[in-house]
Image 1 (tube, helix red, strand yellow):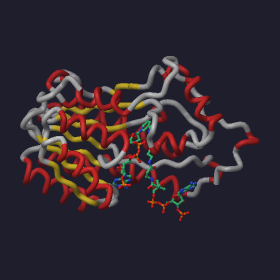
Image 2: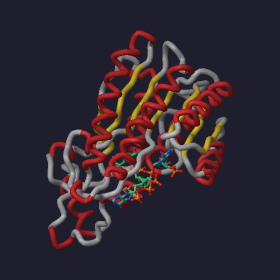
Image 3: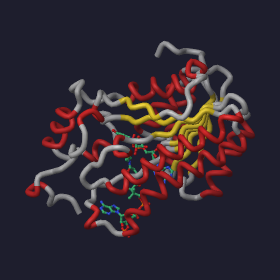
Amino acid sequence: MSQTGILKGKAAFVAGGTSGINLGIARALAEAGASVAVLSRSQEKVDGAVAELRSVGVGALGYAADVRNEEAVAAAIKAAADTMGPLDVVVSGAAGNFICPAAAMSGKGFRTVIEIDLIGTFHVMRAAFDVARKPGCSMINISAPQSTMPYWGQAHVSAAKAGVDMLTKSLAYEWGEYGIRLNAIVPGPIEGTEGMKRLSPTDEARRAVEDSVPLRRYGTISDIAEIALFLASDQSSYVTGTVIACDGGQLLAGAGLFRPPLTTRQHIR
Ligand code: COA
Ligand code: NAP
C-alpha cells in the first residue's frame, strides 16, 4: 500500500475487525500508521488479529464482545479511547448472514441479523460518538449490495443493510456539526471471504456471481481496504453521508442475482 504514514498518530476502532474484509481494513489502517483496536465475539479471533496488527509495528488492542450487547460495546470503545486517545477512525463491519427464503424464515432468524448488522452498528456509532475526536473523526459502516438490490434468500440482510445506509446518512446529517464524517462502503463479491462462502456455496453460484460483475472478476479485500483508507484519511475531508460501492459494477446488473433454480434449492435449510 502506498499510503504509509498517512494515519500516523491516529487511533482507530474496528468492530468486527478480526477476519475477512474488516481485518483487511484494520490492517490497512495499521499499515498507514494508526493504532488499531478490534472487537468481535471470539477471543481466539481477537487474539489472532491483535497479533497480526502488532506485527505491522503499531499499537493494537482487542476486545471480545458481541455488538448486540450495548454495554459491552460501550465499555470496549471507552477502554480503547482511554488507552489510545480520542478515536479518529471508527469502522463498523460486524455482520451475520445465511441464505434463507423469507417464507421459511423465523422471526428469530430475521431479528438475529437485524440485531447484529443494524442495531449493532448503532451501538458502535453511538458509543464512539462519546469518545470521538471532534472535529476530525471519520466513521465508516460496511454495507452490502443487498441494501439496494433484492437477492433471493436475503430479505433479512437487505432490511438490515438498507437500515445501515440510512443510519449512515442520518448520523452524517446530525453529527456534521461536530466535525464527524460518516460514510458507508458497499463491497461487491469479495473473494476468499466468509460472506462469499455462504452466498456462493456451489460452483454454479460462483460462476453466476462472476458473470454478474461487469468487470468480470471477484473483488479483493485490498480493493475494499483502499476505499476505507481514503474515507479514513484527510483526503476525503469533504466527503460525508455517502454510500460508496466498490463492486466491479455489480449493482448495475440489477435484481435477481441469487435466484437458484428450484431444483438446486434443496441444500438450503
Ligand atoms: N437458515 C435459517 N435460519 C437460520 C440459519 C439458517 N441457515 N442460521 C441461523 N438461523 C436463524 C435461526 O432462527 C436461529 O435460531 P434457532 O437455531 O433457535 O432456530 C437464529 O437464526 C439464531 O441463530 P444462532 O446460530 O443461534 O445465532 P448466533 O447469534 O449464534 O449466530 C448467525 C448468528 C446465525 C448470523 C451466524 O451465522 C454468525 O455468527 N455469523 C457470523 C459470520 C457471518 O455470517 N459472516 C458473513 C458476513 S456477510
Ligand atoms: P467475516 O469474515 O465473517 O467478518 C465478520 C466479522 O464480524 C468477524 O470478525 C466476526 O468475528 C465479527 N462478528 C460477527 N458477528 C458478530 C457479533 N454479533 N458481534 C461482534 N462481532 C461479530 O465476513 P466478511 O465476508 O469479511 O464480511 C465483512 C463485512 O463485509 C460484513 O459487514 C458483510 O456484510 C460485508 N460484505 C461482505 C461481502 C463479501 O463478499 N464477503 C460483500 C458485501 C458486504 P466473530 O465471529 O469473532 O464474532
